Amino acid sequence: MTDPSPASGAPVAQPAARAAPAPPAVGGAPAPVVHLAGVDKVFDRGDRVVTRALEGIDLDIARGEFVSLIGPSGCGKSTLLRIVGDLTSPSSGTVTVNGKPAEQARRDRDYGMVFQAPVLFDWRTVEDNVKLPLEILGWDGSRRTARAREMLELVELGDFLKHHPFQLSGGMQQRVAIARALAIEPSILLMDEPFGALDEMTRERMNSEVLRIWERTGTTIVFVTHSIPEAVFLSSRVVVMSARPGRITEVIDVDLPRPRNEDTRETRRYFELVTAVREALRHGGGDLDDAGTVAGGDAASVERTMAEGAVG
Amino acid sequence: MATATATRGGLGTVAPVRSGRRRGRGLLVGVGVALALLLVWEGAKFLGGTPWRAPLALPGSPVLWNPPFRWAFANDLNLPHVWNILLTFNEPFQRGSSQSVAAYLVGASLYTWREALIGFLLGAGIGLVLATIFVHSRLLERALVPYVVASQTIPIIALAPLIVFAFGANVMSVVVIATYLTFFPVTIAMIRGLRSFDPRALELMRSYASSKWQIYRKLRFPAALPYLFTALKIAATASIVGAIIGEGPGGIADGLGRVIITYNQYYITGPEKLWASIIAAGILGIAFYLLISAIEWAVMRGRRPAAI
Image 1 (cartoon, rainbow over the protein chains, first blue to last red):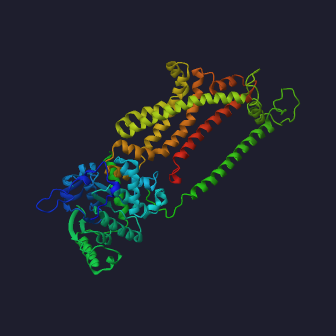
Image 2: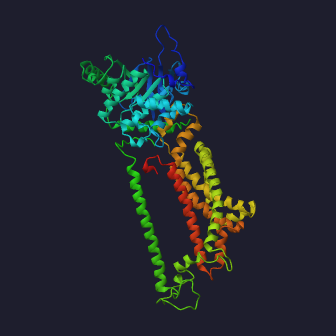
């Protein structure tokens, strides 16, 4: 694991997660970055339609892991990610991140978020978009600039600092979003179908890019996806979920050697694992429909946000 | 806002060129419309107006053209000749004065603009504060927005004397009236504008544990700017109207409002002067509007061309 922070960029207003020592070890094993125990989520809109989005979720994610959540639409994988990120709260159960309640982790800026849409601010240049979280953290101007440029170099967009988002392709925009998420050196990166809107070619390129960044920064990543090949190629573990109610049906360890590259996609073991995940999904009772559902899931999450009137 | 669309190789330089050409064409059409209006105006006079005489000639001077019909709306009192209106700018603004109508109107326009500007700034500020309160409190929004709307259904003509009674016959009253007409469009537009952000951007801001102020400053307000400028353009012209109307009951002697009232009273002897003052008021409104547009252009330069 390489140290992602350069000498120049050590934050003054230290996010607690960076300052925090490794979480206290319990029984010799290092404490997980994410600890979910008995998490339920029920959407009750008061019109007698009660949706049991998640039921009895137990999951531990260790530091430096790359964990994918995969399942049919409606299995609550995005909701689960949002619970980890404290963008919504569970109906019951405990969520601990870096040994703290999720809300505290959010206040300590332990998270980096990447959504399916890049969600860049049109009125800011690419560079200023990456600076946004640093402004919120109160970094001073020159350090902001240095970090933003460093992050944009990392995603190979160093030549596009002064462009505006609408001048970039979809894949480039998503790379800016990743640079922005990594700028504050989050101890955990939450990615919600980040490449769902991209074409297959761009998607595979972005997969390699994410792996490269993950290997360089050593950040813990939780990654929601619809795509089996993507999940297998990227992850150290694939968490397979089923719908109605949303449950974890199987956790598959991905033992593909690293570093992985395009050749990995052609190995026998890769195909075996893809098949294993597919079988697990089938046994879970879910039918994985790829396209079509992507937009629907996104709209639902937006709707939830608005229903909760989530400001501040 | 969020840029989900992939504009591969979309070059920012293409749009300004195109919009520049479009603006040139727009100007051409605008001039064409003005010429057409003049043609209709003078055409009506040609067919059914008062007998044509030399520009600014006194009654009794030789008739150059006798129109075949006599239409009341086209006589020299209702529709003075365009050249006479233009020439009147160079006349003394009242008998025996060395100051021309043009100079007098420029002075009065600037005076009125100052009042309107103060009212505009106050109104925009009040509108912004009200909208900010309303988007953060549904309760206050539901309780108070009906009153904001009701305030604009009262004719300003009825309200102006009350305001003058309260604030005295001075510039203050005029400013209050201009403010009163200005805050409304800004309030209504900004209630909408401050909610026009991408909800996913709000989640992003929440994930950074941003304060409400940071969300306001970095997300809500910039996202609302297109709405704000639209409202400010409406408010700019409304503030001019408010100031002109307010000057009457406000007893202001130096502004366009008084000029219009005076020339109204002398309409029988010099209708061109009233038309000249109407043109001045129009130019003032357009100039204020263009000023806001220029500021908008400067502020919004970096944005997606379609957003402007």
